[in-house]
Amino acid sequence: MDGEETGQPRLWQNVASERDAYASGRDAYVVHGLRGVSLPGARLDRAQLAGSNLAGAELNSASMRGTDLTAADLRTASLEDSKLTAAILNGAYLHGANLRHADFTRADLRGANLADAIIDETLFIGAQADHATTWPAALDPQRRRELQIIEASEEGQT
Image (tube, rainbow, N blue to C red; front, side, top):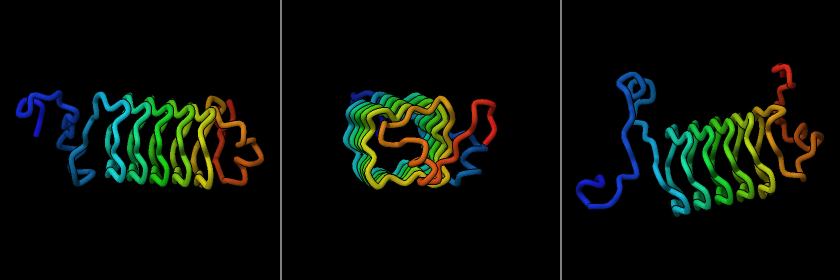
């Protein structure tokens, strides 16, 4: 159901091109205005959420594999137990987010702000980061190496 049928604003907009639908086997969506929304257990795999405002959203146990969250606002969002494997979080704002038990394996965190994020048993195996990535104080360089985070140098080398 869309906004025209319900009288409510339309939150999802189908943006799949023929090429994208063929490549992924399903449609892609852009989300508008979901600040503070509660979507526990949501299946958002390969969704196009770049630039979305998800500040304060409850996305616990969500599946967001391969989701594009470039420059998304996820500050103070709760992503506990969520799967963000291979997600794209370039320049995403996760300041103060709850990332307990979340899986960021092979995620792209270049330029992301994770300052004051809650990380407890969070997986970052093979996640990419760079000099512009802001980490919580508890994640010093030694701890990032232990978590197998791949950090590019300022010259762009890994």
